[in-house]
Length: 317
Image 1 (cartoon, rainbow, N blue to C red):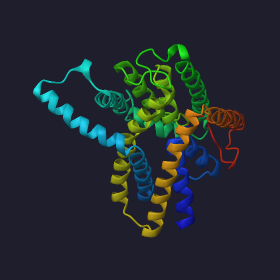
Image 2 (cartoon, rainbow, N blue to C red):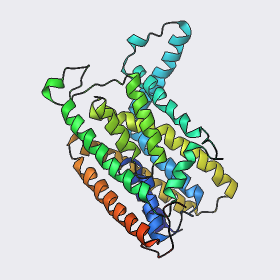
Image 3 (cartoon, rainbow, N blue to C red):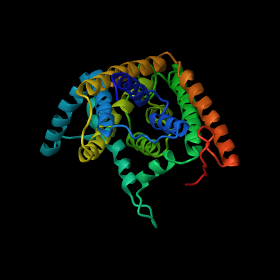
Image 4 (cartoon, rainbow, N blue to C red):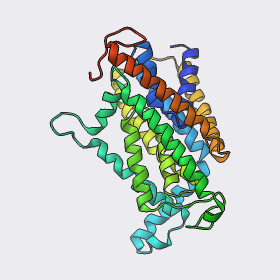
């Protein structure tokens, strides 16, 4: 791997990690077109995740620091009996709802009866399929969710709803309820399983459907993604250490730096698109890619072969 490769991978990682277009879906499509699985340096991939993690932390450093301080204050109140659910401030409410939203992720580790697989293993099955029918449908589902979320975002911002449920200046609720957090949490589980279903886009949309202010919903989505990115880095890091590390330090530094910078810009860009009500760009993009991939999948099912590589392909591996 050279510096140019590192820059390209850093850009792709930084963009797709945060923009609502599904990084897993685009990875599956790339592998399908080239006919080559992702056999790159695993440690390099781990470090790209670290770069995007740094982007989130830097972008939201003030909020993260306030949450850390409030977390320890909350622990103190719990042990001294001063904690009161109904009197939580914004930061404390956010901490509790983030924890609740993470709980559904444990579903991924539930064994599938009659197999030696766990639910989380379905993600690899879907993304590694010879014909990407699931990915195509998931991309179209992303488009639909983004469209519905945009509709509710405008509805929440309507003048009649500005003062309802503790609305913010942009309209909608600022605080999540337990049901809101559970809905977002299970949406994140679905996004983890279905390549093509954007995690950031789907969780944002569900937050908007639940009446959350769109900017608050996006902040919740990105903060919620920190544990997910960290977990992915740790799990892949373990495998990387077992495989051994063989990569030029300069190439590694360039890749991480690019993924961090592009990731930071992607977060800023996403927030701008949302604030400017220009989510139609992502709605149209995911719809077009999804429909195009669906057509390709139908052709491949009829021909029994990969349209790009000519290799034999079946719907079920």
